[in-house]
Image (cartoon, rainbow, N blue to C red; front, side, top):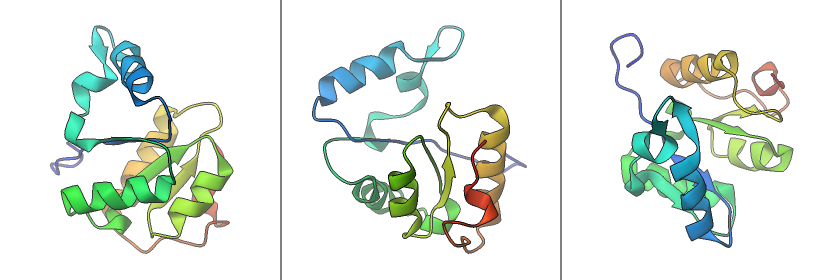
Length: 126
């Protein structure tokens, strides 16, 4: 919850080895004793080869969440540029998602305002 509003998380992963990627999610701890796949339901996990834009479109279809109410973190500038075309708030995270970057993304998504150009301040590295 953020400001009383429920928030959700989803996973968009481009992989030609989905079973291996899911294994990684079982081992990636987000808190002591809590793995990533414990907090993100399988229904909101898009893991397959292809464009991250396609992954976000699929998540939009499943959830009904408007693109401007989503935030996306990625270490690849191409994915940031590609997904931002949908109107998703995108954040380049070359060293991973920090708490500060997560909070900026959450604030942008909760505001639900139009996304600035991909080269705007919102898309700076953290």
